[in-house]
Amino acid sequence: MVKVVCLGEPNPCSPIGFLTSGALDPHNPNYNFLYCPSFPAAVLFSALFGLTTIGHFIQAAYYRKRFCWVIIMAGIWETAGLILRVLSVLHTTSSAYGTPSQLLILLAPLWINAFLYMLMSRVVYLFVPEKRIAGISAQRLSLCFVLLDITAFLMQAGGGSLINSDNSGKIQMLGIHIYMGGIGLQQFFILGFTALVVNFHVKMNRISGSTEWKRPLYAMYASLGFITIRIVFRLIEFSSGIYSPLTMHEAPFYCLEATPMFLALLLWNVYHPGQILVGPESEFPRRRRDRN
Image (tube, rainbow, N blue to C red; front, top):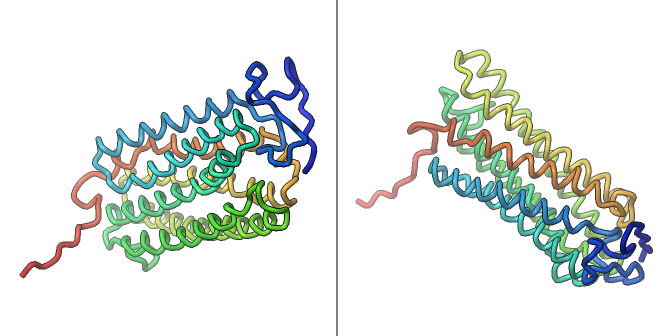
């Protein structure tokens, strides 16, 4: 285990200074962090993710957009992951908090991906007269990309579950490689999806005089950008193995993981789909079984 040296006052081995129950033992191989974690930062981001998630609950109910349960799940997983991180700071040698916290944070962005796929399919259904883009029907667009997202989810879940301080270094490295393959696959799907979004953008500029469709589209570009920043960070972080410069400092986690994901969630509080998807064609028709 790499030794961790923490400098600071008043207690050089405490992640939160005055609260000694969170004291750091750098010689303990079961320690959850390779740095002195910040208790205030974990609490702050727990609150931020919690607030945006509550906002999504309220907005989904107000606008009656049932598919928004997907982005609510993203918020719940991020919030739960950060709350468990708070507990992990207070109980620095307990994998009961550290392992599930890491797994929830690693997987939560895939829910945002799924939300974007489902939203884009509804935007196509509402605004494109033939209700298809690049030869793909709006409903099939959603189905295909969500299934691809599930594939990436399973790979990342399998790899992430192995990146556990209770496992040997060899098993952890196997988990890192599987997880990196999963996020690489996720980014590949994002690039394919972005190509369809651009196709839609060009098509709508040509056939529509309306600008209503532009607001969700620009928000989608921004969301995809935030997710890509986060994926690139994780690829660089794990490319050097368990003990890389990025894994041994806390600031990159909050700047390049937590902040982009918070902004991706907050963005859809501001530009909620319910403001744009209005009318009978804003949702796919429900299938009804013939009772005769």
